[in-house]
Structure formats: C-alpha cells, structure tokens
Length: 114
Length: 114
DNA sequence: TGGGCATATCAACATCTGGTAATATATGTG
DNA sequence: CACATATATTACCAGATGTTGATATGCCCA
Image (tube, rainbow over all chains, first blue to last red; front, side, top):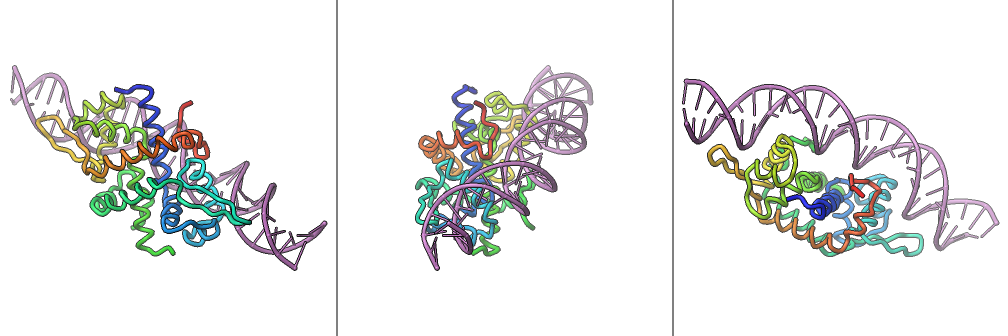
C-alpha cells in the first residue's frame, strides 16, 4: 500500500538519511560526537574547506541534526539530538558486521578509494 | 585528525547510509520491515517498476542490508540484520521531532514534493 | 521437453548533488 | 573608526546517481 502520508514520510526519511550519506557531513557529525566545536575547529578536524564546512553545517542545522550557539565571534556547534549520536553508533555496530559487503558493493560506487 | 583508517570508516558509513537515503530503497526496506516479501510483492507494495526494484534489491543484498532466499521460482527477501530495523525505527523517532526542519531544508533539495 | 512467469541484467538518458572559488557579512580589537 | 579574523553566501562546474526500457536468464508446470 502506498498512501500519500506514507509516501511523504518515506521521502522525509530518505532526506534525513541523506544528511548522513555524505562523507563530508559524516566527518562533521563524527567530529561533533566527541565534543562541541567551532567552525574553525571542524575545518581543522575534517580537512575540508571552510565554505564547504559552512555549507554543510547550514544544511545540518536547518535539519535539526546539529545545534549552533554563537559565542563572541565563534560559533559553537554540537549534535542537535541524542538520537543522532545513537544512529551513528548503531551504524558503527552494523558496519562491523556488514562492512565487507558494503565495501565490495560497487553497484553504485560511492567514491570508495581502493 | 584525519587518519586513513578513520577516513575509510567514514566512507563506509556514508556508503551504508546511502543505502537508506533513496526513497525507492527506503520504500523497499520499510515494506520488508513488516514481513518478508517476494520481488513481485515488493513491486506491488511500492509501486516501483520491476527492474528498478530488482536493481535496488541487488544493491541492498550485496551490502547485507537484506537477505534473499530462493523458494521455487520466487525469491523471498527479508531484512538482513535486526539493526537495520533498529536504525529505521530510530530514524522514525528522530523524524517525529525534526521533521519540520528537514521538510523545510531546501539547501540541498531532495525532490521533496510540496 | 516446451511454454510461461519470475527475476536479473544492460545501456542510455535526465537529473541532481557536492565541491570550489570568489565574495559578503559580522564581530571584536586596536 | 579602521582592521583583521570568523563565518556565511552565491554561482558555476564536474561527476555521480537513479530511472526507464528492452532484453536475457532461469525455474516450474503441463
């Protein structure tokens, strides 16, 4: 059955997961798992460019996945919800078992280095 | 810090989440949450085309997110790991709180219908 | 063994997404 | 008030992704 409500929920969920499905955003989220960081610190931790980080942070903030707090001229970012960390943790666990399969899954390659 | 190992793990995790980040795959996974289904049943449940479903199933199977079992000329699919369902459940919960933000997040639009 | 359905595969196309670069804004500081 | 630093924004480009359609393979039933 494919009700309109269900379809909408599915689209939203897909959109939510897309927040996690990019290496850059995932790096940011993983960095924030340890402790809140400023943008500059995130840039240093991830090696991404500053505009790139800012762009992704904006997206993550709009989606409620991270929260920001301006302190002086720095902006501190932290995970916006405990369940974000929980999902990341579950993914780590799951990955421990299915990593090999995913690694070898080249059907839709994901810029996986060799 | 961006060690090679960490980078690899991040890539893998991104790849894992990408498995969930597509409405078609998510529809399939959600359909399988209720009970195992054959390809034909999945096609009927999701409204997707058969080749499309088959393609995504192949990807999901390779990644270990679903498991398949051939029974006669039908192939029965089911979720490959309890944590897959757990992640989907957590996402539902999280979505209940941040849905509005995600819905309005058009920064990287995600074919979200109005 | 032949017919028919269930499933998988392949190639091509339209679309979207993420990165970079240049630039703008704002907040303290001297 | 001018300057330097921190963060955000915009536009554009390259690459990857998902869908479609036609087609191939394989398993059951008569």
